[in-house]
Length: 276
Image (cartoon, rainbow, N blue to C red):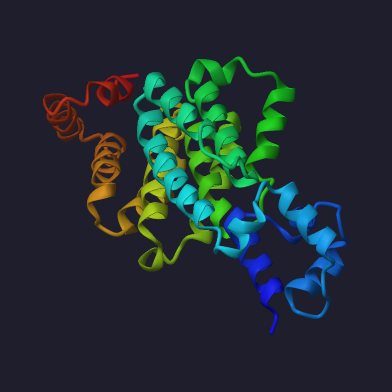
């Protein structure tokens, strides 16, 4: 029975790590891979060193790492909230989320990656902040966006891209959005949290494209937005999608009607953005 190998694999997936990252230079990747598959036995010292490297207590490891699982639920909830408050330019709420992430223990690579993303969003979610970044800083952020290769971290990359899409040129962003739409084309089988962040991403890109007078870039993401499931969490981006469809179609009365309704509902921040 491959008890240790299976548990190491489960832990690695909980942490959102590749086999290379999990092995951490303590043992070779090929040897570690065979440990997960039950083909090699790992020595006690190497096993304990790997756990220590990833801030996992041995007792917690054998107790089904419940703390890590609970932490992941907390991080997911905080990152979902981050999508909303970043779009509202709510710096106080963004910093509050970062502080809560910093207090989570143990500070696993998964948690540290979430904190890094939140800080990047905090520092760059504003258009002016993005324009002040150096080319070197932009390259570093782009590297962070694509440094992970697990499905779970793909979701967190989407959150990051949603908030700093303008770090790319409008042409690069259009290519990136098209690639994301192809990757998530099966909209009926997406989980709710992915649907939410995709809705926000499409609207952010459409808004930017419209302001850049690149209306031709708006059609595909607006069509994709309509194809997303009609769940309550994406009602707002879908309404904004209709607003932009009216603007692009020169239906200004209908577009202004949507703006007025949003303003009456208290969404002045969004209305101000739409007025730019």
